[in-house]
Image (tube, rainbow, N blue to C red; front, side):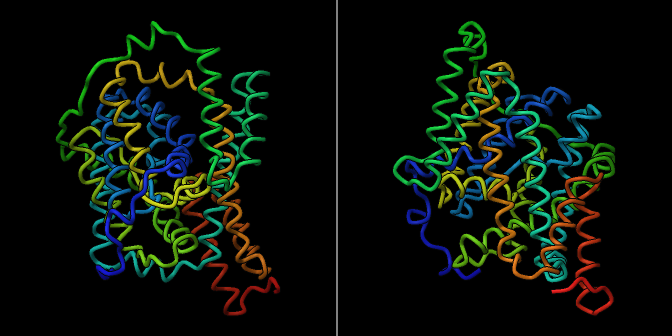
Length: 387
């Protein structure tokens, strides 16, 4: 990308109420995954939180856009389900970092980007929207019983009323509701005081055996999701919201790789970019990398000063509020279908891909392959769905 295409840092980064509101746009996705992997794997919470925060700051400054990073979702699901230890996670993170660097350096990622059509990318985004909405409505909103439903209803009403309001950003009002609820009903001062202590990240050197094991157990299942959502779908959302910024899939792949080549050595959990995180930050008001830097600062503070009792402290924040934030992130992703809705065949492909992604094991790989195959079969007249 030409240097002239990137404005100076002072023009690209803002820190205002809208950037602060946007910073909470992905909290409902990230927090439960981070808590889950720390509990299941025994990873050092300070290292995980500090490195996650640093990667956010890096991404926000590098791109100057609301381009957050997220824990690798397939990694996280496998770690939580199988209680995979930290040393294998570090090995798998290094393996996927090297794999993504190879794809970027050789240009293979560009070939994949040209091969996968837009309806398939929209379908991947729709599948992620279905998963996020299910998580929000099934697990988060009902979490605190009747009081939680009332809180979720208030948060939903406030979000609908204020969404897009630059003076009173919706996410700030919703987060304020959650904080007030937590202070009244959930805060345990003794637990909060015990959680306070200074900790920094710790050094790790992945062994060859751990890299190989992590590559097979974790990296291989993750790559299809990363190609679909972290690279191709993220590139599409960037084009949708920031068409003046010509960011390529190779650039996204490079920063993805770089983060995972650093993270394993300092005890961080593997991360990626993601279309859902970008959509969430944008939906709640963010327009620059300031939201991501602020978001990263939150995790840095948690990691450096509150990691000792991290799980207990963050659990006082009401899940119904996170569920509302997550639901609007899902709606923002689903709404991206509108630009292909005028073509019946493209819309059907996108809906099929979304259902496959959301409903099947390895659904993102299945959706990517099946959707792309059907799309080109229709283009050649082998399959007739109609206009």
